[in-house]
Image 1 (cartoon, helix red, strand yellow):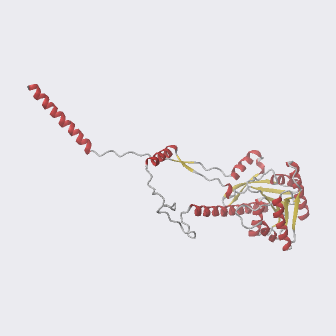
Image 2 (tube, helix red, strand yellow; image 1 turned 180 degrees about the vertical axis):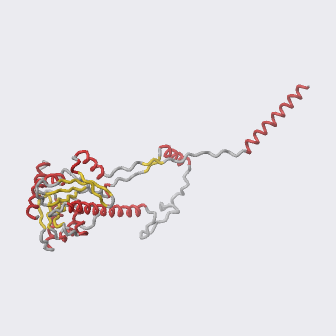
Image 3 (cartoon, helix red, strand yellow; image 1 turned 90 degrees about the vertical axis):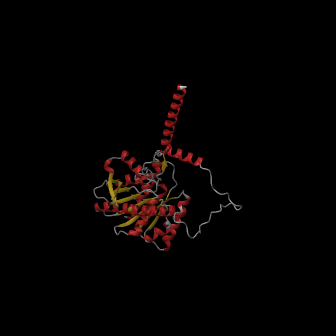
Length: 337
């Protein structure tokens, strides 16, 4: 009987202790879960195409040919070759086309290397990328973050209401076409693209000015601005806007209007009334048509010194074709300067 009383008392004590522990556990606040902040992995900014090509040239060409110019506080690379004669005829500033380097193997490169043997200093520029060649810097979530987001999305049930008979959600409303939303991605993209184009034009203008300042330091008799492809457009545009008095010769090699520029070459080149050499290839249909437009525009205003040179059909032999171009350009320079 005594043992039963002891066992009963012991069970009562254990019951009280167990209930006390449970009560304290219930009263204690739960520790907040520690969450790790999402990690965003930023891709490093990629170099522009023009910067990559300039770096390649630094590895391929003698360091003596490189000069650093400054345009608007930004340094850029140009290629300089002095004339191989005692009395130089002047300086030719070369502007390559879109996607081309300062030593492009067609046109710009052969001209800048060959003309010094015929009395000309040459200065070949590198131009900034066009908006179409700008690489977007993307930001992507880290793998853990992407996984967590996917799991969360899968756990949450869809609360979207069903569309009505017309196929629209009840809360959808169409924005008025004349009043695009301020945060409309298309509107933002248009504004950003316009800003990029404006910045590119300003950068090209600054680089041409820096090149001309360097050319003037050599006290040349003549300064010639030569543009190939879209470089021809930018050369003409610069001369139209700035009208430097000491640049009276313009050379265009297969000129082309850049994407996004509204003023055609036929309205840009002839009104300059500079001594102009306009070279185009006869075997390229698009070149023939645009060259004809420029020629007709020059005739309508009775341009005093506009001359077109039709280059023969290319043979496919790069060296031979480039020699033809160099001879024609050299012949034009001999007559017009």
